[in-house]
Length: 165
Image (cartoon, rainbow, N blue to C red; front, side, top):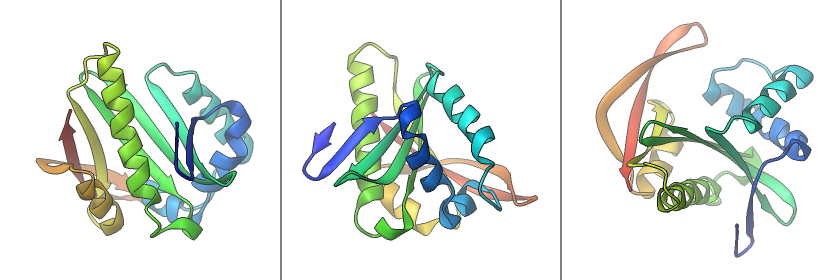
């Protein structure tokens, strides 16, 4: 998908180095609950496994051939769960908002193609104010549901946001 200066592509094994770089940045490690970058080869095996999973899509966003963000879309039941990461040097430039917009477009297209999708959901750590703003800007609403997830050895609260499509 191309729009303006952005290019969103479905990831392939050839994109692994770009994906690894994004996921290994300190901020992205922090919000995903890791203390250090994953071991390169083990993480690559995980990445390839996810690429081959029919219930998960991974996308990468590029600007001028530089990878600036990643997007995960997981299909389950009648929902789509999304997650995204933005390179630190591109924070505050609308990349997160754009990634979530694209996730919603992909979910709607999948629904039109026959998948039974009612909602797009996002689980966001209660302290991740930036992601909360991005999700709300894209029309998601805080549900009454929350979830406790273990992060850095302790349980933390995650808000669940949803958008009906």
